[in-house]
Image (tube, rainbow, N blue to C red; front, side, top):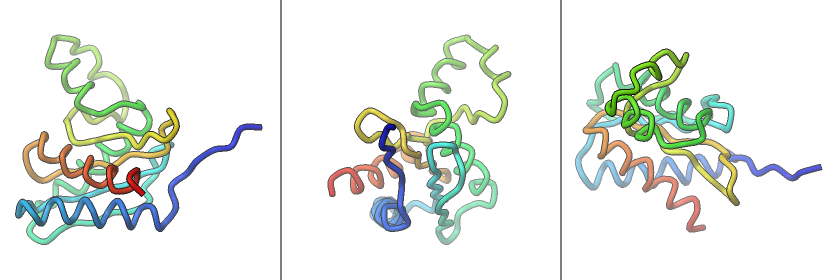
Length: 135
């Protein structure tokens, strides 16, 4: 049998702390969602002054990155480059800001962020993931 890596509560706290710190450094009000490899919510934080719509968007970005096993920017680019039929994929959020967490070549979860420009959302998500992987 294969050994499977998974996110612990401590891992989620480490990711969330680093992502929040990146957002605070830039004075960005965002929502941060962390999901497992099946896209199920493990951890969530809505920072002060973040728009209510960002709650569902951040969770959608995280879920999409986890189940598609790729950054949501790839899916956004695919649609922007004319493959609009991709929009029929159920439950996928086609906005940059969802980043998978990959350990030893396998996706173990993802981080989704919403609240600022999509590239900034992705920057925050990646900061959280980098903190986890650096440990």
